[in-house]
Amino acid sequence: MRDQIPPDLRGRRARDPFWVAASALFNGVQRIRSLREPVIPAVKPVDRTRVMLVQEVRREAADVVSLRLGAPDGRMLPAWQPGCHLDVLLPSGRRRQYSLCGDPADRRSYRVAVRRLPDGSGGSAEIHDTLVEGASLTVSEPRNAFPFLVRDRYLFLAGGIGVTPILPMVQAAHRLRADWRLIYTGRSRDTLPFLDELPAERVTVRTDDEHGVPDCADLLADAAGAAVYCCGPAPMIDGVRAAFAPTGGATLHFERFAPAPITDGRPFEIELARTGVTLPVPADRSALEVIRDALPDVAYSCRQGFCGTCRVGLLAGDADRRHPGDAAPDSLLPCVSRATGGRLTLDL
Amino acid sequence: MSVHLTEPENLVLQARDVRFDWSQVPLHWIPGDPVATHLVNVLHLLLPAGEEWFVRVFKEAVPHIADDRLREDVLGFIGQEAVHASSHDGVLDHFMEQGLDVRPFVRQAEFLFEGLLGDRNLTGDRKRAWLYERISLIAAIEHFTGVLGDWILNAEALDEAGADPTMMDLLRWHGAEEVEHRHVAHDLFMHLDGSYPTRLRAMAETITMLATLWHRGHRFLMAADPVVKGRIKGGVHHLRRTGPAGLTPDGRMVAASVRRYLKRSYSPLNEGSTSQALAYLASSPAAQAALR
Image (cartoon, rainbow over all chains, first blue to last red; front, side):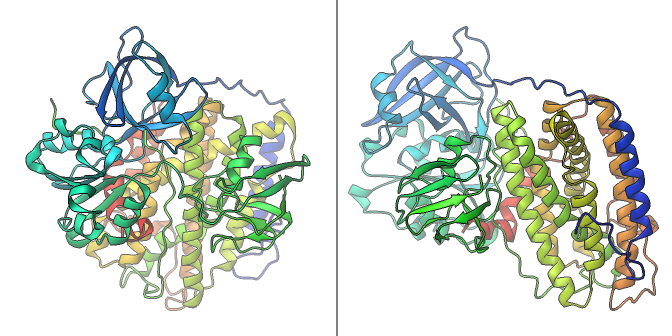
């Protein structure tokens, strides 16, 4: 119905003469142009990854190493700014994101730091166990999901290895002669990397073994009027978000590498109706992630349920809807919603 | 060592889960100036249908992209545009509650974006050519949304005129995200097609389309307004007053930006300021609330 010429704006005619004329003109031009066979230029693939050499591996704390990476021929690297991260493609095929924590003025090397996660999915263990000086590593261009803005006053909150993006921000704030403070939290002093690179007079170290688990309201006690940059474990970021109030023009900035972890997830199956393929969705993955493994070109965006980009037709099955925006009975947002059990048949 | 930070670059684009409460926003949200109010309101009539069209076209383009970084940018762009569309939809519902029946014009906008510019049941190369054609139009439209976004971020005259803060936050949040992602549509067009004559044609078609829709939309709103009741005739000629007064974009400013677009060396990154857009997003009540 929406492709029919609409009534005019005053409701006098069933077909607005303006749109009759505009359609005739536009469709006429399209028809004339379609007399020639279209020429579709070939799309030139762009590869933005580069192979880097591990120049130095350094132990920074009990379970943290830093890697200094440079081009094999020593040439200049793409510029970056505080808050940028690299996608690192490990020899096993794992892809991990690490914040750049060196000096942006050093155009010949990048530094990343990695904490060994004993319960992680193996990326950090692979770096700790297999990467030595002289090894090579494929990385992406720097990208920024945590942009650092010029302000007069900063409060940096870093939890453990979350200090990595904060380090270049601290340096930049220092160079801007801004009024800045850093509260650096962690289990104990020997687990905190880069303490030696931070000026002690502006840094408050709060470790669980000496001060107990920090209260987020305490961390934010000095936040009025400041730009608060927070990076740390997910519970710390969530706590700071909940406790933050924009007093005196304070603003909150944080970075999330991954969507919020799935709570109370149960495994289920999805059937892709157009191909008949059935895929298992484990308890700790979203249906969207599983779909993307099979169909890499499927569109999605926010991965939190609110933007609706990944919405897909639901042909059969009982949905466990996990976002208020996912209410239509014949569709599903696979980035958040799941099955109550059994199988969902999707129009894909 | 320089103490100046360069403009933030290589941003990862993320949609923001904003919400607005329209209940306190007056019909004439620029107080005492229905003419300027409705010149801006035309945007609300066009954007839901227009931005949903952007989303459909760009989703169709994703499988053709052979550049991981551009694909990420396009996916981020799609999410931001989808939230823009639904936010402006909320304004239209509020207009209806205040006795301004916008449905006839919205129906025409839907015809444009879903009918004339919609899917044409083509196949093969013709389908691809029609996709590229529409991407070229979106790239030209996005030039204007970036320029308008930069304008609204700096439109102090609207604050001085007492414009409603909720409406200003919607327009500035939207404008700031338009500035933030202003390069994506152009990058996508250059990656897939990149033809200069196509860019010129798309700009000519876009100017014709936007100028006509703005004129018709304003005339419609002035006639349908339950207070004005057609006593002032609408039309883009009102820009001659509201533009220099700073209440709406100024024609000369827009014309100068079009001359920059027409250069082969055009880069959307030279329009507007990323750091200003990010600074607004950091303090926007709606965008800040979305973080919590």
